Length: 263
Image 1 (tube, rainbow, N blue to C red):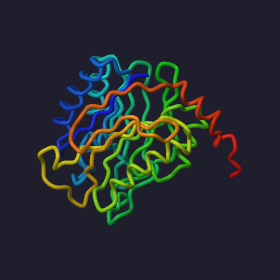
Image 2 (spheres, rainbow, N blue to C red):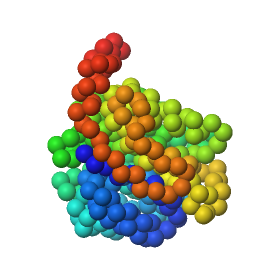
Image 3 (cartoon, rainbow, N blue to C red):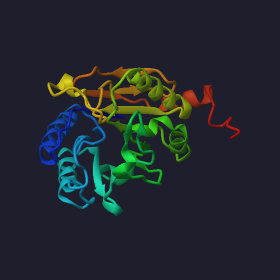
Image 4 (cartoon, rainbow, N blue to C red):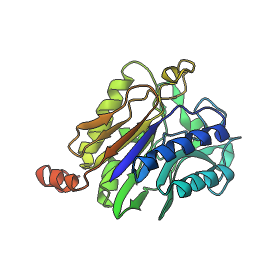
């Protein structure tokens, strides 16, 4: 399966970000990708007041993403914000395209390193997978990567690949943690992991990163053996990679950690 990871820097205006999504989706389709994955907060970057921008899944922003997917003929996965009770929003991944229509609400909220996502965001509670070309794929978001149980739940549901859109917070040691965690989660669940981060704003010609988690780049495709197969640097880019689904069975036979679990 060919997939594309679109490492972009989104701004605070959802309509302008749709232009980036359309351009990148068309490029991904031209490359032969079956899926294009955009970062968390593709609708609007963190550091923006999210509640006034949040829209339901049948609102104009999501509707336009569906149109982009239909026009390109591939599946689009992109982070957006949907309304939640109490004036909060839900950090949602929209997955849409030929034969696919699903949404995943981020379960683990980023209340760490001095940032409190839960002040404005309500947590999700449901593990979500999608099927593309007969293959099952799990959905996760950013801080979820610190919780191996979710990725094992994807594997238990039959997933051979997990998509991880992110808007990773910058700071000392955070690049090293990103690399370590995405490799560990692929190996924990012995599945492919496609981790797509927001590009570093400074590398995109914007202002230096603020306290808000606005991305460091370094999107990657990791094999089920935990090795990084392809990775971008900090700036914007489109990573196109072929995922060998059969390799999942090979690795699981060699390292049957899922079958050997006792807890």
